[in-house]
Amino acid sequence: MPLTFIHTADWHLGHTYWRIGPRAAQSSTWRLDAVRRIWGLAEEKKADFIVVAGDVFDSDTPSATWRRHAIELLADCPAPVYLIAGNHDPCAQGSVWFQDDFAGALAGLENVHLVTEAAPIETPNDAILFPCPVTKKYAREDSTAWIPDSSRGEKWRVGLAHGGWKGYFSSGDDQTLNCISSDCADRAGLDYLALGDYHSYTPPDHAAAKSRTFYAGTPEIGAKDNIRGGHALCVSIPHPGEAPLVEPVGVGRVQLCDLGTVSLSCGEEFESLQNRAAQIQNAEDSIMRAHVAGHVAPKIARALDDWLGTMREEWLGVDVDVSKLFAQPTPDDFRALRLERLEESLLERLNGHVPSEYLSGVRGASEIASWSGDAAARREALALYYRLLSEAR
Image (cartoon, rainbow, N blue to C red; front, top):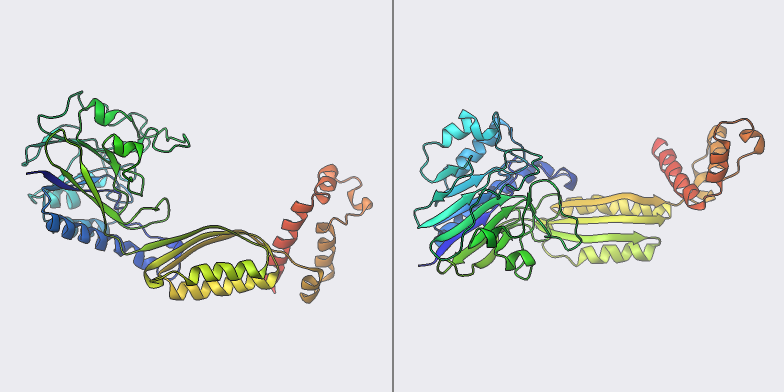
């Protein structure tokens, strides 16, 4: 019989996705629902056990409410579950991992194993689990270094860790904290190395996958790096030493629609953005994400703001960053605001009309003169000034 288990990570219980608007308060409960679907998956696949690769909680000191939610959730687990700490909830004295109202409450549950030490665990299925709990939020050492060198084939060997697999991103921007050696699985003879930290699961053509190393991703989409979020991995290893068969299974509710960076300068481009969003199906279970940048007429900026307000009613959530979008006002736009004389005077200076007598004797006069010749800086300053004046009216 093959060894079959479920690999999950990064539950981040207690996390609220505040940037999505009116339904943000509900978002923390979606994670509980996603974990319940993982329990259903474990039953369906007749999993031998479940591993949770860190960041069970969003903090190492979750509220009493979230500790209670976690206890109730884990009590319903249909198979043995092994949980380790991650960088968000490190396993240190005083943390949730050692509190009586959490760890103590779970101590009597046969299926729940809170792993607080780096030591081999023999599972009932003739497999050896090598857990690597994170003990410090900003640890620099490789938490998997303790796993002894070995060859594959005698027993199933499964590693469980949380951190950044060295070389995971081709851009070379490896993290320096909680860094895991890229040769861990091969050095230690692991049939499978289950990782947590990155919130998207590892695709089969990735270099890490070819080294029998996988991230499960987060079971429910959050605020970052969730390209392949909302899944758990069903892992099957036919015999010790053989390559694992890994199947990502959707367990999250949320569909992420990332529109990327959108540059706006005219009404036609705004209409194109609206059309792209209109083509998305199941908006009621989707989060729209985008970064909108550029310079547009104030009426387009207002139309965009109104449209986003409508989208927040129709979509599950809207996470659109407009901090780099500037309403580019015309002289007529400013005249329509009926400026006071002092406001008009400042407008003249923002337009670069700085009288020489104004600069005479002024500290930093050369910087002012230089700025007044910078068209891009003036444009952004005018856009910001118009926004402030409009909001004050």
